[in-house]
Image (cartoon, rainbow, N blue to C red; front, side, top):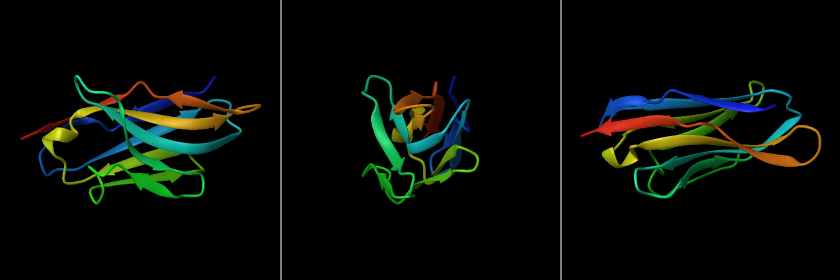
Length: 119
Protein backbone atom coordinates (compact mmCIF):
# COMPACT_ATOMS: atom_id res chain seq x y z
CA UNK A 1 0.00 0.00 0.00
CA UNK A 2 1.09 3.55 -0.76
CA UNK A 3 0.36 6.42 1.59
CA UNK A 4 0.83 10.16 1.22
CA UNK A 5 1.10 12.04 4.49
CA UNK A 6 1.00 15.83 4.54
CA UNK A 7 2.26 18.06 7.32
CA UNK A 8 2.98 21.70 7.98
CA UNK A 9 -0.46 23.29 7.83
CA UNK A 10 -1.74 25.65 10.47
CA UNK A 11 -2.83 29.17 11.30
CA UNK A 12 -0.75 32.12 10.12
CA UNK A 13 -1.27 35.84 9.79
CA UNK A 14 -1.45 37.51 6.41
CA UNK A 15 2.03 38.13 5.07
CA UNK A 16 3.45 35.14 6.88
CA UNK A 17 4.94 31.90 5.62
CA UNK A 18 4.32 28.17 5.91
CA UNK A 19 6.07 25.14 4.49
CA UNK A 20 4.04 22.07 3.62
CA UNK A 21 5.57 18.62 3.26
CA UNK A 22 4.18 15.44 1.78
CA UNK A 23 5.97 12.13 2.14
CA UNK A 24 5.07 9.06 0.11
CA UNK A 25 5.63 5.69 1.73
CA UNK A 26 5.02 2.06 0.91
CA UNK A 27 6.09 -0.18 -1.92
CA UNK A 28 7.20 2.42 -4.47
CA UNK A 29 9.09 1.69 -7.67
CA UNK A 30 9.12 5.22 -9.01
CA UNK A 31 7.30 8.55 -8.75
CA UNK A 32 6.37 10.65 -11.76
CA UNK A 33 4.54 13.93 -11.27
CA UNK A 34 3.92 15.44 -7.84
CA UNK A 35 1.65 18.37 -7.08
CA UNK A 36 -0.27 20.38 -4.54
CA UNK A 37 -3.96 21.16 -4.90
CA UNK A 38 -6.22 23.14 -2.62
CA UNK A 39 -9.91 23.39 -1.91
CA UNK A 40 -11.43 26.40 -0.21
CA UNK A 41 -14.89 26.22 1.43
CA UNK A 42 -17.60 26.19 -1.21
CA UNK A 43 -15.13 25.99 -4.08
CA UNK A 44 -13.77 23.29 -6.36
CA UNK A 45 -10.37 21.75 -5.86
CA UNK A 46 -7.74 23.61 -7.87
CA UNK A 47 -4.15 23.00 -8.87
CA UNK A 48 -1.69 25.15 -6.94
CA UNK A 49 1.69 23.88 -8.14
CA UNK A 50 3.10 20.94 -10.05
CA UNK A 51 6.58 19.45 -10.45
CA UNK A 52 7.66 16.76 -12.89
CA UNK A 53 10.14 13.98 -12.17
CA UNK A 54 12.71 16.08 -14.01
CA UNK A 55 12.10 19.12 -11.85
CA UNK A 56 10.05 21.27 -14.21
CA UNK A 57 7.46 23.31 -12.37
CA UNK A 58 4.30 25.25 -13.06
CA UNK A 59 2.05 27.32 -10.82
CA UNK A 60 -1.43 28.73 -10.63
CA UNK A 61 -1.39 32.41 -11.55
CA UNK A 62 -2.70 33.31 -8.10
CA UNK A 63 0.42 31.95 -6.36
CA UNK A 64 3.19 32.73 -8.85
CA UNK A 65 6.04 34.58 -7.18
CA UNK A 66 4.84 33.63 -3.70
CA UNK A 67 4.84 29.82 -3.62
CA UNK A 68 7.64 27.42 -4.52
CA UNK A 69 7.25 23.69 -5.09
CA UNK A 70 10.21 21.35 -4.76
CA UNK A 71 10.86 17.65 -4.34
CA UNK A 72 13.42 15.36 -2.77
CA UNK A 73 13.43 12.19 -4.83
CA UNK A 74 15.61 10.33 -2.35
CA UNK A 75 12.97 10.90 0.34
CA UNK A 76 9.91 10.57 -1.93
CA UNK A 77 8.82 13.95 -0.59
CA UNK A 78 7.35 17.06 -2.14
CA UNK A 79 7.34 20.47 -0.48
CA UNK A 80 5.41 23.69 -0.89
CA UNK A 81 7.00 26.84 0.47
CA UNK A 82 4.31 29.48 0.83
CA UNK A 83 5.34 33.09 1.39
CA UNK A 84 3.39 36.34 1.55
CA UNK A 85 0.26 34.42 2.44
CA UNK A 86 -3.12 36.04 1.89
CA UNK A 87 -6.51 35.28 3.47
CA UNK A 88 -7.65 33.94 0.09
CA UNK A 89 -5.00 31.21 0.39
CA UNK A 90 -7.07 29.67 3.19
CA UNK A 91 -7.96 26.14 2.14
CA UNK A 92 -7.32 22.48 2.68
CA UNK A 93 -4.16 21.62 0.77
CA UNK A 94 -3.87 18.18 -0.80
CA UNK A 95 -0.77 16.38 -2.01
CA UNK A 96 -0.93 14.43 -5.27
CA UNK A 97 1.57 11.93 -6.66
CA UNK A 98 1.67 9.68 -9.69
CA UNK A 99 3.31 6.52 -8.39
CA UNK A 100 4.37 3.27 -9.99
CA UNK A 101 4.40 0.21 -7.79
CA UNK A 102 4.48 -2.77 -10.15
CA UNK A 103 2.89 -1.85 -13.47
CA UNK A 104 1.46 1.46 -14.62
CA UNK A 105 1.40 4.75 -12.75
CA UNK A 106 -1.51 5.35 -10.37
CA UNK A 107 -2.72 8.61 -8.85
CA UNK A 108 -2.55 8.92 -5.08
CA UNK A 109 -3.87 11.67 -2.82
CA UNK A 110 -3.11 12.69 0.72
CA UNK A 111 -5.88 13.38 3.22
CA UNK A 112 -5.18 17.11 3.26
CA UNK A 113 -3.79 19.67 5.65
CA UNK A 114 -5.63 22.86 6.61
CA UNK A 115 -4.03 26.23 6.03
CA UNK A 116 -5.78 29.22 7.59
CA UNK A 117 -4.57 32.75 6.89
CA UNK A 118 -5.98 35.45 9.13
CA UNK A 119 -6.26 39.09 8.06
